[in-house]
Image 1 (cartoon, one colour):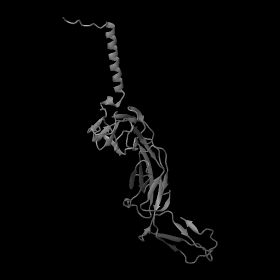
Image 2 (spheres, rainbow, N blue to C red):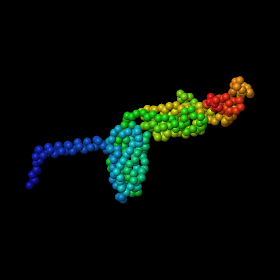
Image 3 (cartoon, rainbow, N blue to C red):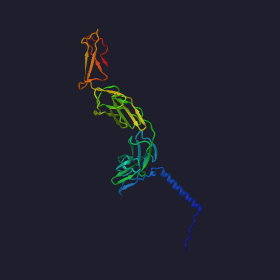
Image 4 (cartoon, rainbow, N blue to C red):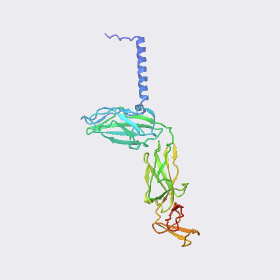
Length: 315
């Protein structure tokens, strides 16, 4: 005898369909608001059945965060602690496949680390970045369970803040042929560019150098070719992707002046006559210096010269 098929009440069947549709919609909503919805694969464990590091998750930035500021300071990231850990590996990439060609930052950290700051100047604005953390020991690797996480960096910002040159001071003399140039800090910079020229317009700089953000000095090498007893102009530009903040322009005069000779028009000096003197300066190679500022002439007081009020003159 065939068993009789039980019939579901129409109202109950309709309710089941509604619950089923709502469940699918809710699942789609959760996927679309996470990096996993961008095609990423969930994290997991690899290695043998031995005690690999335990499961853990990333915590900062929140998955899918937007407008992360990459111009004011390093970008902080954080995760929960795993167990049985020998080290952590943090990886940041432009795509969620984390292939070498898409990797923009990676660092290995100690077993006690649960946070890190991504080096300032590494990330650009207006970009989706994907990141994950791997917990590693001798038995295998456990990837953060919510990998890949993602965040979007802010695409708007301001140019670097104002800053000043420090040394050599303006009009400094005598300066080294390989001087150290220094300046104060500019905010939100991604690099500094330094220029030296014998023309204050910097139309064709004789020397340029670049410093990373936070580095406030450069050492000019002797290979830059600065000449003795010559006036040079220098400046620095603080740069980020939104623009450039220029410094003021300073100058310095290289040394050394080894010696001077003074040739007077008369060998007798008295209160009743005037004497014209020619001053000639020589550098360390005993070559005549044709351009050098400043010259300082020192006159010693003595019999018949006491009527001079000053014993030095800068020309």
